[in-house]
Amino acid sequence: MPELLMGLSLGLGAGVMPGALLTLVITASLRGGFRAGVRLACVPLLSDLPVVLLAVTAVGALPEALLRVLSVCGGLYVVYLGVETLREARTALPPRPGEDAPSSAREILRGVVVNLLNPHPWLFWIAVGSPVFVAAWDRAPAYALGFTGAFYLVLVGSKVALAGAVGAGRHRLTPRGYRLLLGASGVLLAAVGVVLIVRGLAPRAYS
Image (spheres, rainbow, N blue to C red):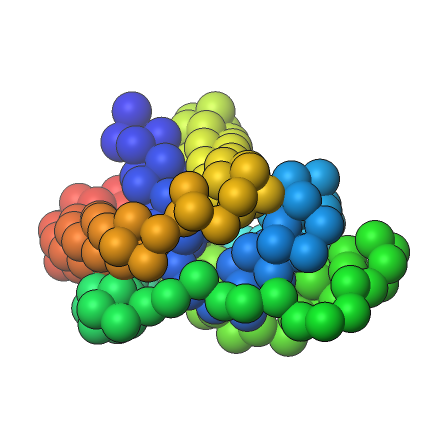
């Protein structure tokens, strides 16, 4: 089931990719421990539903030729993210917490707003996730649901694991370990991007 493996790979890359939400997860874990980090890690489950519905509806109405173009563009975008992540991994450091810890409700609300205003989920689902979802749905709905479920399972799970590591103590998340994790995710993202490009160029990828 290639969609399941792709969902797992993309979810891991998106889960540990440097960004606003990951910074919020780490900062919340440093401030309030594991539970505070988990609340922020689960934000995509609250904020991504309108993004997914709008993107899948728009892409589902597109002809096959445009799906190919989207897949190639999405693959190039994922490769770009992988390269940028590898560059970031050279000097990346876990963010430091601020002085004042906000309330749980405020943290979650801020995470939802940040994620909705973040272009990355929109770009991912328009250029990458939706073409894969639509193609998988045409084969069998279970494949599309497997891709989506695997993606969010690993996306949220990786952030939860990171929150646990940070919450347990700063020394468990050394700069070297963080850089190695980012570097591995960058390589994985680039590889998945190449797969998406090849699928978009394949003559029967969406038939």
